[in-house]
Length: 340
Image 1 (cartoon, helix red, strand yellow):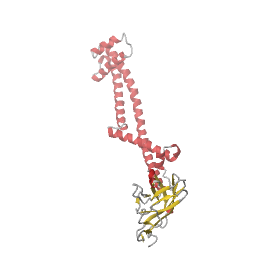
Image 2 (tube, helix red, strand yellow):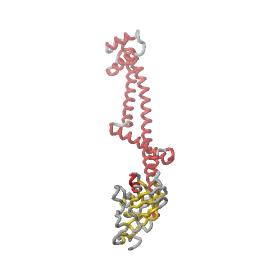
Image 3 (cartoon, one colour):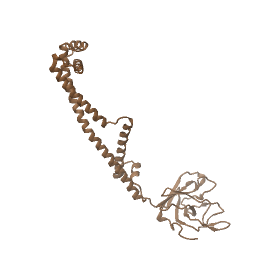
Image 4 (cartoon, helix red, strand yellow):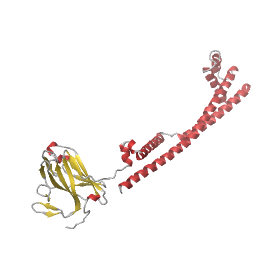
């Protein structure tokens, strides 16, 4: 899959997910409207019920009907507290009269008014509870789902802004929706030493020097490097094919499909023709070395080569890793192009 198509797929998935979350959010808003209407009705009928029950309770206390404790308390409060606690106690007394379910013959009108207000409020309370149970999650799992949904919605909106306005968003979000196209990086510099890719070839038949020179039968990926010293001091170099004097001194490749390509090792008796094992590079001088790797998977778009910096002046124990990137077009003779 190409980089552009991969980016388009990510963007498509993000937008589709965002649309789904927005639809769910709008449906939730649609459920909120009836809930607010029901809540408004409850507030109105509660007020009407309270007024009717206070009136009924006052009449019951005046006629000494109902709970004697409440009646005595109300009658004592009438002289000292015309509002506040008095109305609370009268509402309690009126409610007890309604809940008794027996009409008060001497207070028929007050009872009927209070009964209608009570029943109207109970109806609205039950309706509000029914709507609320559909709007608010029931149980911890439902709450988790709701909060996770809103979290995903927020994350989706953040990704959308990262796509539309990348300069104003955190880099990690931008990287999720904008995949950069790989480019050729054929040289890297480390403390005045330049490492330059001079040639990259996938082929077979590369010649190896040694006591018995021979040509390799297997297909391999060979990279020719120039190591150039631009400093005023000599630079010691040990090969990136791997040197026994230093651990982790071997280069390796990662191709665009995620395949790691380990390098071929060699010793000072058997190595590619023209290569070096170790050398001292004079000021403003350069040497060439050859590195051999396994072949990338079919359809690769680029390879990344990683070079440990400890191979340059090893005594300094540098622990950086240098990176060079080669595009598919930078590599010559892909596959088994030339027979031995």
